[in-house]
Amino acid sequence: MSREALARRELRRLGVRQSLGTRVGPYAYLLTLLVLALGLIAMDKLVSWAEGIRYAASPLVTAGALLLAIRQWRHHRNEVSISGSLDRLDIVNRYFSDPDHHDVVRHYFGAEETTGWNAGIESWAEWSRRMYVFMELDNLQYGLEKYRLGYSSAYQALRVVDLFAARAQSRVFLAAAKSLVGESGGSYTPEVRGVVKSIQSGARFLGAV
Image 1 (cartoon, rainbow, N blue to C red):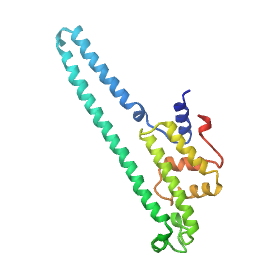
Image 2: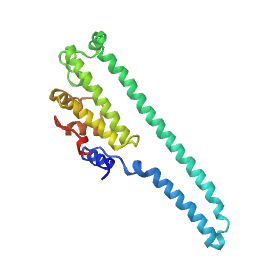
Image 3: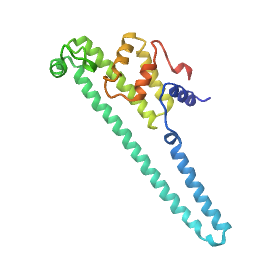
Image 4: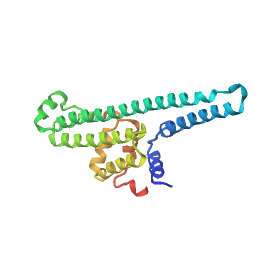
């Protein structure tokens, strides 16, 4: 079994799946287009009333290729949008992580009875640790979403998971991550929640690939 297939199997075990359409859609589309074009050429030679129909094959292939190019362009724009969103999120995270801004952040979010993602904001050390975990979770979500939408290979996605698992060798980090992906812990995808909840301290994933 290839490295990519092994990585895909490991991701499925973690609850991260790429749809069949995402994985083979463009190839199936091109194959269908080729079969239609060859069918038109064959009809022209074998069926008397279809004489000249082969000339429709070229415009058909051209139009199909144009539609596929538009689809790929839109997918590229989506990938750029995802990258841009992560960049903007990183700016906010860095602001939150800057000790010079702690008083401002605490003014809006801090309170002794605070619970959820901003609990512990009164302690700068605890807040800094929490923001670091958030940044690692954001990187994990970015890597998994790129794979799920077809913008990266299964092996690259599993590398991202393995890097997060390396961080999770710290039981304190892992406990914080599991807490932060809970219902009150931000807008993480079901895939991220599933992966984080599945990881055990000390587990690694590239060794199986």
